[in-house]
Length: 263
Image (tube, rainbow, N blue to C red; front, side, top):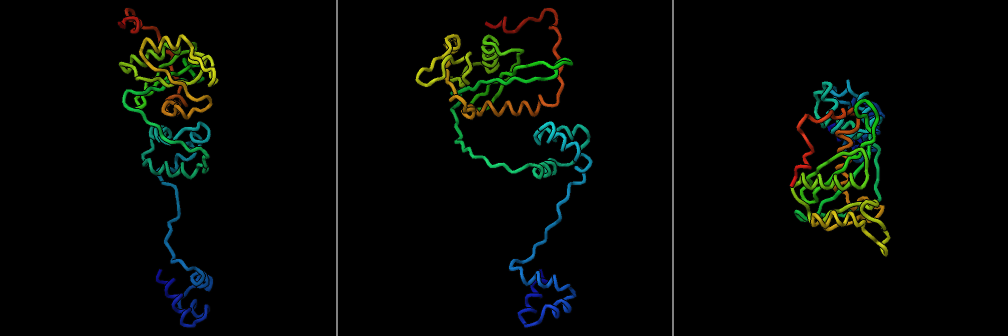
């Protein structure tokens, strides 16, 4: 900063670039750069990777680009193999790997009162279960106000399994919200056309039993039920991706289905 000021001062006194360079002990290129710049020079430290992160760079890139894991999951995997650095260093490095993406979609956040709404959906996954690849369907329900979540899994997505998953979630929460927001599969909706919209009568019977008002999403607009879509993303990143699961063994003798003993 002092050098920049002195060079500009000497030039204002009528001294040539050659004379200024000789007096300051710098090259003429440095003098010209100082005279061209109208902004004061700022010290910028060269960016370098945190030393504690360097031994894990290849693993980080594999987890990020090949396995598509998010930052918090990558941090957990690194901690397991000895990484002792901070989370900020990792997140800064990942930020440099990402390509900037601009979204053309703008969404207004929608909130509901306590006990007003729950959202239900499911997602199929092919995972290694008990040493072989199996198709597993994970069902999930999220309470709109508190964001409390509950998941249950099945090997199919037939109507009976879907209804059983809804009941499992209701039993877990200890009650039902006033509304249940769902997508538009045949298990719920027989006709999605606005002028001919028709609920599946079996689904209406289930809602009537638990005194729930059914609500359907707008077709092809998953953001309508974003509170349940995002928890599936978290489940995928933190639990499903990169894990091998063991298939549960038989129940101990004398242990039956808990639902069979519910009143």
